[in-house]
Image (cartoon, rainbow, N blue to C red; front, side, top):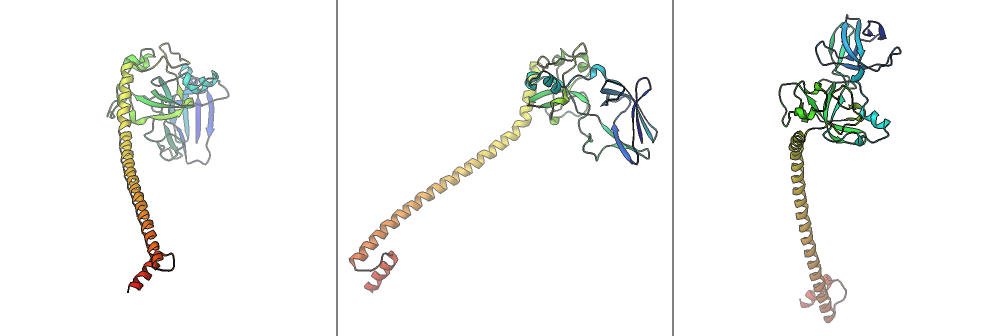
Length: 304
């Protein structure tokens, strides 16, 4: 099978020929669906990020018509931090609005002309996983990783503790973020590399080099904090209660061992006192030996 990449002028930018392959994986594309962006560096162009505009497959050849992504491909926060010789925490913080690239969907094309979703190559995007570049809320910043709460505009079943993001939170950003209502996906929290995270697009189509000024409004921050607490506090509370029960059990066992120790010491003291009396009695009666049991036996035999 042959994979061909065509520019907007219909000229070939590059091609890949697969010989003796029964199937190959390529980026998913569907007319009218979400935009698909790919990374390709061709010798005839300085651009690296491309948007797929058209796609065709005739059973032997796959053709992708692509165009330069232009301003749609800003530098990642990881690259910005490196260029500024700075820490990630100096350009992004909790509750900031960013974009994260979760990759493109993958389709599997067969040499016999069949097509299906990828369900076996775990190195690529899998069914039901997040994909595409989407806006997210930062909930934690590490050394080189960022924990994100993804947003979605898809209508349908609403997850528990999901919330609508107020338009005020996007007031300083491009209008594209306000075309549809965004909701949080609290059950899809992701920890990703800072090189997969990008600053949001501003009203003029440009991208900032620091994200501090672009964050959730106070109302959204409070609601999100409460929602996250509701999700994660219950398991923590259960764990805390189990730990309390375990501590109480250990304290009870400790108390029992302490009482047993005292009783053993009392018994040992009584034994030593009794032993001393038996040995003294044995001396008075002329018994031999220092074993209390032998002395008692001698005394009993004498009395008999």
